[in-house]
Length: 243
Ligand SMILES: Nc1ncnc2c1ncn2[C@@H]1O[C@H](COP(=O)(O)OP(=O)(O)OP(=O)(O)O)[C@@H](O)[C@H]1O
Ligand SMILES: [Mg+2]
Image 1 (cartoon, helix red, strand yellow):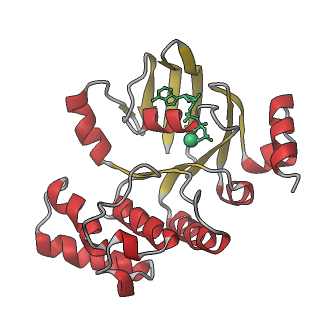
Image 2: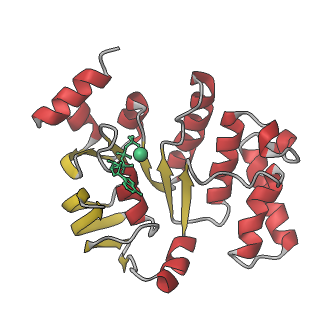
């Protein structure tokens, strides 16, 4: 991926949540953002996804300036795959229908083509036996794997994931992390926010440590986890890696 943030700012009410951030990533397949709660990770991911519009600055993603108007944002967003916790599955639709719906409605595929592909994807994520279940009949890990299948169904160039494993127990977390590792092996680019430090370390080509609306430290994952340079990064990692 090629991602470039230039003087990016976003405030809510009076407080800056993303504070004049300039940073870039070039050639990496995965970018992982870590940092304390409230530091601005989800906000930054939403800005990149075109779900929020910055107050100042610009974002260039894979050679395209992220648009700032609703009309231009719609096709931009349609090219991405997003798995945000708040982007829940449609509760009244079965697993397979959840994957089919965006393909037909947003991407204009025929019902048959979409169904065929959706079933392939569910097979792949070991969800075939669950395809007719509604979300409430599925476990958290199964729901999250369906959300990932849905985000991948239109074969986006880039997948954005915001804490895809929070609210899951350790076994389900493992299931979802396995799926993300496989995607990485297959060459899917992604940007992910996570509190799973071991996973961040193993899967991140580039890592950003965000706190108080700024990227405090950026680098390769071994460099940051192995020998963080900034005191704030050191303190954070000491705290979260203690137990
Ligand atoms: N829609 C909003 N309106 C007002 N304030 C917001 C809004 N969204 C986020 N904030 C504030 O912006 C700050 C950054 O929030 P953000 O969700 O980006 O943090 P985060 O790093 O993702 O935290 P966490 O790890 O807890 O998910 C927080 O102080 C939050 O309260
Ligand atoms: Mg968040």
